[in-house]
Image 1 (cartoon, one colour):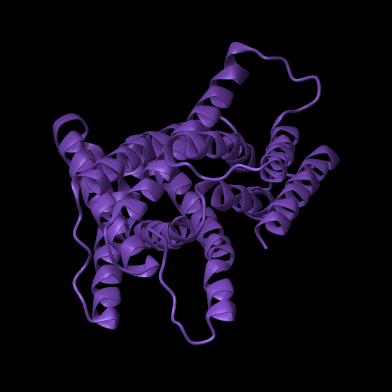
Image 2 (image 1 turned 60 degrees about the vertical axis):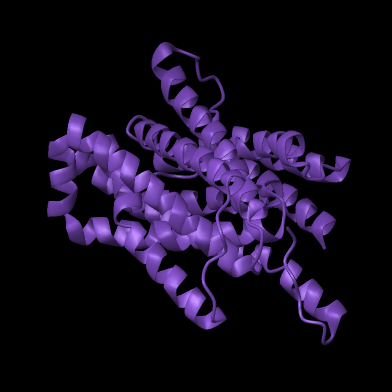
Length: 314
């Protein structure tokens, strides 16, 4: 279902709202970079599963607050969630859990920036899955933009002369696998938002966010109570840092979902490749991990691909 727009000044209003996905995606990328940094530090304290669970358990209260605020502002209840929207949300929620766990596991073996680059092989998969499963338009120019930006990610992440040893292959597979699951998650959440029968883009995005985080919190909390109770207890003991990571995760997801409600997941995830240069900056300033000329060239390709994508979207 497409977003509805006011009738006054229909052309300018429609354009301004249709392009809202651009600042929403940029905001989501900034917040997600900050969240990943926080989760990485938590991984050393409470392990991969514990750090994965933090963004959901501690993000849920904020998602519910967002939903209450949006409903009060709109003066209505959330839209009715049918079986289609619920099924898409389950798919998005479960694949996001898997993607986050794989990403954090890769971060334990490679640098923050390189792991982020591996996961950003996602846009090509999002474009293909979106075209096949949701019928999202995939023009030649758009796919070329996705390929150029993704090639830039490969240039950033792959070092010349690096041998594909078992030790080097493992973090690469973890990172690319995380990207694949992130792609499926994006498609699931966009499908869920589209499947809601009513409401504007904001309330539909926030409704699916709250439902997704509730399902993820339920699944991971039950799992950790049964299989990894010490990590759950440790996350609660480190509640200040966990709460901060949860807020960043919920806020980032809110902006991701706004983007998904307004345009294809491929557009959102390709623009999100600006997170790779952001990760390089954070990696250099916080972890003292340098940036080579090759990595700078790869980031230039990412910027060019993103620019081409925006030209096709305007």
